[in-house]
Length: 112
Image (cartoon, rainbow, N blue to C red; front, top):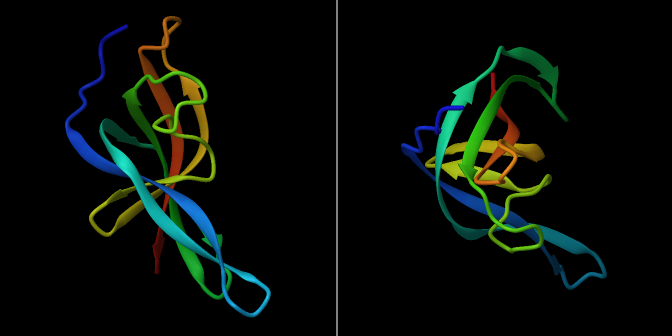
């Protein structure tokens, strides 16, 4: 297995729920840290969003491994940000038996 080429800087973001003052909650994305990553695209497709069609492209984002339970370890429901691009994390697995790298199966959604 070849080592991944970690040549892109991504911000790992997580959702924080805050009270909205009316008995409900609002969700705000908060930066959790910066990671170096290799980003490889898959094949694209169209999906129906809440109000419009979205182009959805799957990506495999590889980052350095971190221990299970560490706040810096990516997990499903979080996302990576690269400028205005957003990669929603759907699943995370170890790339190698020693856990030196993690593969995050992500999806970039771009409004049409």
